[in-house]
Amino acid sequence: MALLYVWSGAAGAGTGANWANAFTTLAASTTPENAGDTIYVAHDHSELTATATLNFSGTVSNPTKIVCVDRGGSVPPVAADRRATAVIATSANGSIATNGFTHYDGIIFITGNSTGIASHQIANSASQRIRFDNCSFRIGSTGNGRVGIASASASCYVELNNCTMSFSAVGQGIDLGGDIKWSNTPSALIGTAVPTILFAPVTGRGGDLECIGVDLSAAGSGKTLVGSNANASGTKIRLIDCKIDAAVTKSAVPAAHGATEVDFIRTGATGNYRVFSHRLTGTLQEETTVVRSGGASDGTTAIAWKIDTTANCNYSMSFECPPIAIWNDTTGSSVTATVEGIWGGGAVPNDDEVWLDVEYLADASSPQGSFIDDGKASLLTTAAAQTSSTESWGGSTTKFKLAVSFTPQQKGWLYARVKCAKAASTFYVDPLITLT
Image 1 (cartoon, rainbow, N blue to C red):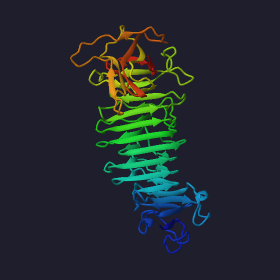
Image 2 (tube, rainbow, N blue to C red; image 1 turned 90 degrees about the vertical axis):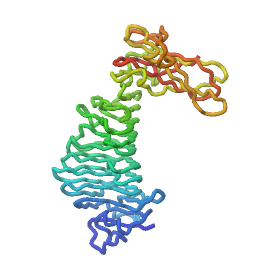
Image 3 (tube, rainbow, N blue to C red; image 1 turned 30 degrees about the horizontal axis):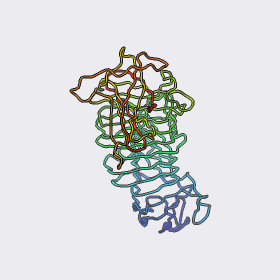
Image 4 (cartoon, rainbow, N blue to C red; image 1 turned 120 degrees about the horizontal axis):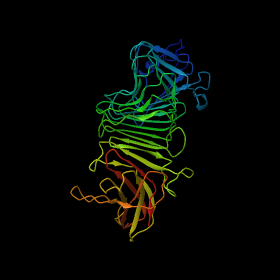
């Protein structure tokens, strides 16, 4: 597997054999490059081209490696020589496209430098995986250019590790037309122009975004992290252990069933108990005032879940809370799982308005889950009131409990899901299961 060199200041034969004879553009290295080759890009490399289409020959088993290194370091370079200063830039409205099974480290991509539209398609052809470490994606043009996976690129996975984004206009942003994992990035949004909508689902496409350990707090008041698109399909967004501004709008209202599902887990400006889920049928977020005495806690702060359903919520299309897990050690004997709640509806809610669905191991010889709930039995069953409760809460009015009894045949995790189905209502749920 060959070692190739790229440096914009080279004046030699342009063979890529060493620094003196390096290619002067990264695109030039694609001609002799083969799967599994390593391309070293000088720390002081700076190229400006009309467009940059980077089609490398890497395969799933032999990706091409492109690494920014100190040109004055070891030959061949070693880990201590790694840098993050090489620049690949386009002029005017020139776009950048990165293709192939490729692993980049330490490259700054600057797309365009005019008033037109210039975009960076970080995966521009079908069925590929691209990884970027310590890179920066910067849109230099002020038109509504995008960073993201191209709308025609199917089956793509992009991994961004410690990578930053910079924009030149608030109408720009990140397109979610495929699978993106973005992790381990302090101060992820650099520059002064923060998009009005940061993540945008793509029309006619699905996507999966997972942000873990990313600081997006530069997006504040007046900004929305996740947009909405009724014509997107099956786009799922999860922000886990991320830092965001307290005033930012987490997500726009989902426009259709199956278009977008948004979950924020341990993500916020402060506190390690933050949670937020957004569906067409409602929202769920953490609550620290209306909480049950002796209920759920992160170890310091008492918490509950506040569920606000929308007019789109009903018995057939309920809002489903995240699963509440608890380990069960009982086998062959009846167990009762109870989850407490409270609301301001004036009377205990009916079992077609809120209910508990428990998944457990009823088969002694396989891991197939079984389900039991305390909701009404069927569409044609007459609804009945849930059970009232005497637990102590910090607010609201009418206390209730959701409980189901069942007989596990194996030890293992139980998963309880509260389902809320009364439209335009507010429920508070203690995300703690009691087993008796």
